[in-house]
Image 1 (cartoon, rainbow, N blue to C red):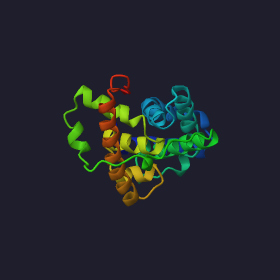
Image 2: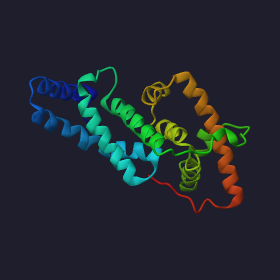
Image 3: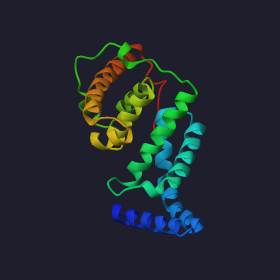
Image 4: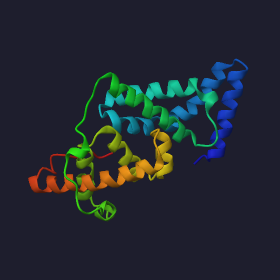
Length: 201
């Protein structure tokens, strides 16, 4: 697996090609990143927009925009973190343009416990289905936050950079979402509809 240093060296070469006017060579070097991260970005955007075709279009737009802004990339973050932030902005703009609205999660009652980690630590198929079915009921931002935190094991500080937010604010928000997610799961159990919903990656 290539290191972050290796990727930074590749980007430095791409920048050199752009500065000398050799866009063809720059694009050829950039193809490495498209190939390596295209599926990751599609999964990322699909957590926000859900429609597969839209997610793929947004992922493509993200890579095009990132290439145009590659000169602004700095080594303080990894390439995947940097481009994830671009993908986030592209997806949010898409939702805003299409006036897609979601029920505010604050409209639902809150669970008195916050044992989401314990609930899903076993990784059983049933519990994974419960989690992913409940994720479907969340607004895009909340769904993405949980995806990055649980599925990609990203620290809150990195998620805050991607989502243009404050780390402390996201920490509080994550705590609230976890409680409400447990409430949703409990409601789904009572209504016996878990078998209908599945959203496996």
